[in-house]
Image 1: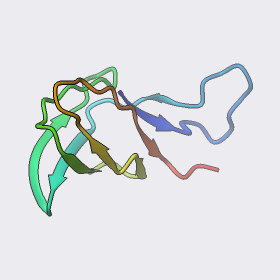
Image 2: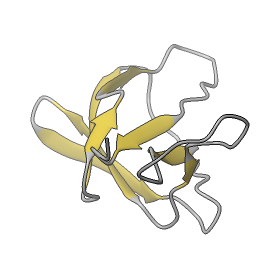
Image 3: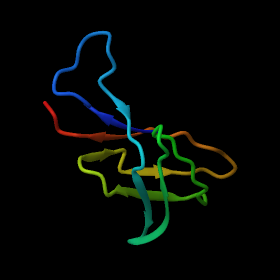
Length: 89
């Protein structure tokens, strides 16, 4: 999933401060070369098949992306939630 957080200037107790980030482009890099990319759907979900390795991840969306890297292990699936920090404080 890709989330935007905080999504409002003021977060309220009991109300989520993050929301799904629709149509965000995620780029996966290895040794300075783009090896794959995907885009989140309207609900912020994405799926991508990557070879077992470590990758740097970037996006064209405004804000700071976390995590900035992921590692894919052999013979396994991985769920990674990316957060885009909007800088709203």
